[in-house]
Image: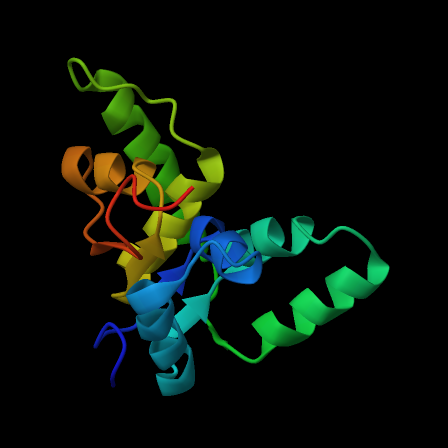
Length: 148
């Protein structure tokens, strides 16, 4: 593998920035190398989120075709239950908010169940990785704060 040298679930925070041109320079080159190497995966929660972002029927078709070319991992009942448990863990952690996006919990739990990391531009994944029992690599596509 090139790119990130590991299999990662792709979060919409990266996909949206890649599609609208905000992901540029070295981070864009690494992202494209990872795409070419087959390192980037999707799952039902990430697909729903990325496909939702399409503006119209033709945009949806293009987005769906691009995403269908990636490898996919299923959302299992075990992963869904792990996401619910992770939310409870966040709620019980002193000084930590449980209010991370539900889709991020599902993506993180799916990644953990499949032995994948998550490629993102979203601090929620660091919160989930640091304060729950979900075990996955939280990988920023670019340094936090470096992309709009």
